[in-house]
Length: 326
Image (tube, rainbow, N blue to C red; front, side, top):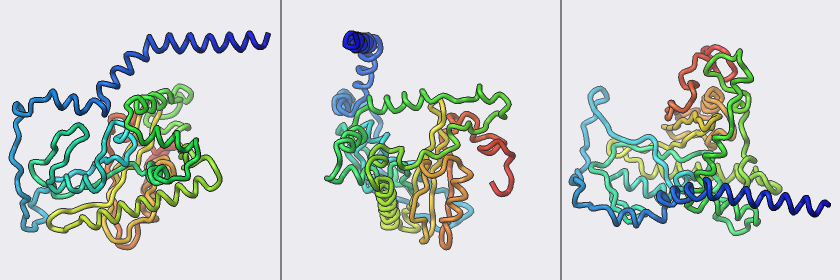
């Protein structure tokens, strides 16, 4: 009897999988294949560059310093292949590549297209997700367990389907606003008030010492970002900021991300991410505690249209009014 029930359950699962594939899976797979990294070269081959206006690269203009009158052009939100979302969509640009591109050098895209700015930038901040610091470091090591190897493969291999799956999982995280009808609009709901912790990464949460190892790797990665920014910084010509993106998620695929830029020589040894703190107030407090001495920081929110009102709220994450301490 038990055997029949078991076989029947397996049969139902198989039927559901087949129906799901023909109902949703095939169309989704084909759609993702059209935007996947494997199709970039074919897509570029269809492009007629002769029909696209191509401005001649302009030399860098060095302006006489005037803090009240000069206009400088730069970018404060740049991702490289070290951000898992960029990597899953086929990005292969390294941090070093990003700096070269910002300074006006030409790069070859994954699909074979030459990319170059018409004019070098005056400043740039490479803002890869701090939540991913240390992950690639571990994935590059040779003593991975089979569980880590599988997770590293999913995170390190360009695959739009994996990106879509992650987006879908986040979308299924629903807000509990209906459970709190008395809560004022624009207040963090309970499920996003608690930081997830480093052990939420599968390769950090398994095995003895996994979390500590990931924290140490994250520190090493952040130190490398600082060193690269310092090496590229040329005051008066090309300014770089050590930076990263703080990337907490919200229910219903929302986000409350901030790019954090630093200036100075006494920068924090650890990049505070949403794995450590879940809200902006705790982030600011952590930055004030760790960015001391010759250190200044600036946090810049982005995609505020997907913050579900929190970016514009009169209330703190716990429903209180903002005060001087916040």
